[in-house]
Image (cartoon, rainbow, N blue to C red; front, side, top):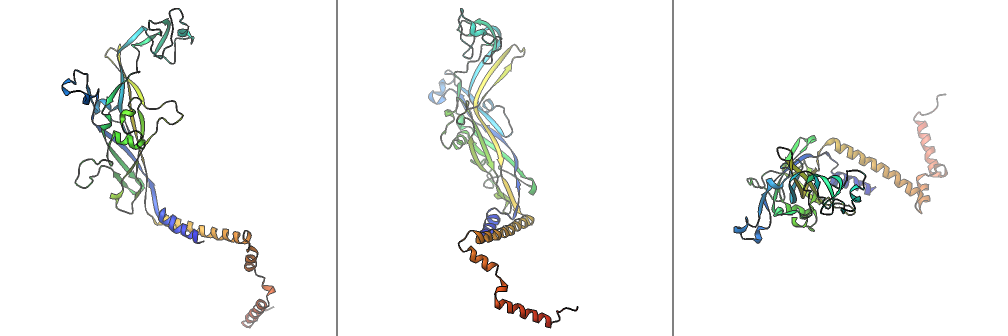
Length: 363
């Protein structure tokens, strides 16, 4: 019984704050990125030679695709570009196309149709000079075996703005308040994060630099957790952050993140094909707020009293059935008054008193 009382008072009321009504957070996130990367490593070359050595600077406008996305962003860490593609009937196959010889083109007709699920065009049934089946498609075909790596992406910073609301309490909060008051600069770990920092946190330190995943990319989940006690000052309602890498689980056949995009010229006859590898960050808002509510306190207290009643019943069953002294307990609980002379005398005396006070039959 004491244990149940402690559970009701300490756990449900104090720890679980059973005296509060609660509401689940709703919110949205957006991010603005800043930084400059490059194709090629400028640190290894004198600045006077950068242009001659093909160093190509790329800023956030080049590397964040699309430029604005709700609750997520993608930043490029490597790219493979195939410019000036045009439709061509005798295009040489690439590594995705079956091998062949001029004498044996059976691989080029093995599906019994021009459609090959692995290729980037229609199989013509002929063999190309490079020993691959010939296709009719956008030529030259993509070669993504050696993508260009983007240097310096890990130093990019993301200014993350989160707006949340607890509708039941009419409370709205954000993570863009001045901290401390009067400081209008972003705060690292509160609304400003570097790409390397988030990657390091998401992998528990196993990957601390973007260069380690630049070739394949990754998907990072960022949780902003708003667990707020609104019985305190609302200024204390601020987020905690959790990071996790969610791609490339054990046993999966693919990891990382990439996609392709194209641009056509004005005639539609030529196109510019890009394959981008990179880091996709997805933002999720979670949390619960609580505030004192008399109805919630009443419900919790009532449930506690019910627990005490149930505990009494269970204790009685245990005492009657499962203890060595159960027989003695039953005897004390169900005492036979008719077998006790003292009790019989008490009953008789009580009957006489009742008769003397007029409690007798009128029949």
